[in-house]
Image 1 (cartoon, helix red, strand yellow):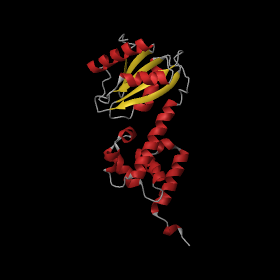
Image 2: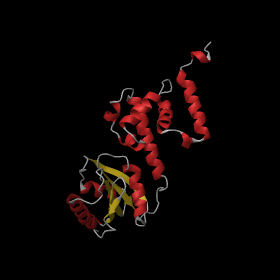
Image 3: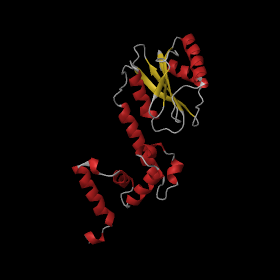
Image 4: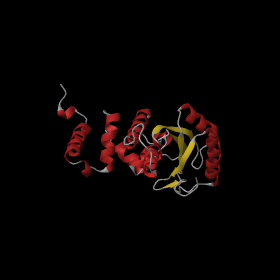
Length: 228
């Protein structure tokens, strides 16, 4: 028979953490929150040292979600299971942020576009290019990643964007990408690409409503600044 004295010490510690979580989650330290989360991925391991090691390397939860798998795997104790868990956590966060915009939601303001864009781009440390497809009433049809690049550029082919619009029978598109460096102001390449996509879209009868660039704490809307 297994007695309480035979049980690993972290079991009682984890139970006490969960009790504190039930009473007042805000009182838990960041490492304790992470410790409990990691406990679901590693139920038979003391996750307190690992949580502290992760936060020493990546000081905020946002940094953890933005970290690349190879960076995380460099921490002793992190393997494929934890990587999958963090990816799941990130996807949960993205869908929670996106949940306020259901299919056929009307994208009638930059704020809604930015909210949808941040749901996918806020934790990215590489540049990604996405396209929002809308119908003739500017209702959401789809939100699709077109490409992933480096820290300062993502290769995009206008024909793929317009082919997507035709395939989805979308009457309009909103271009979205992120600037991981922090400045959302469009580069010369951003402006040239937008002009090229606009020319092709007009020829095909597809409206280009905006091009929104997301940074960590700000955004730039081509429409708001008169670039479209």
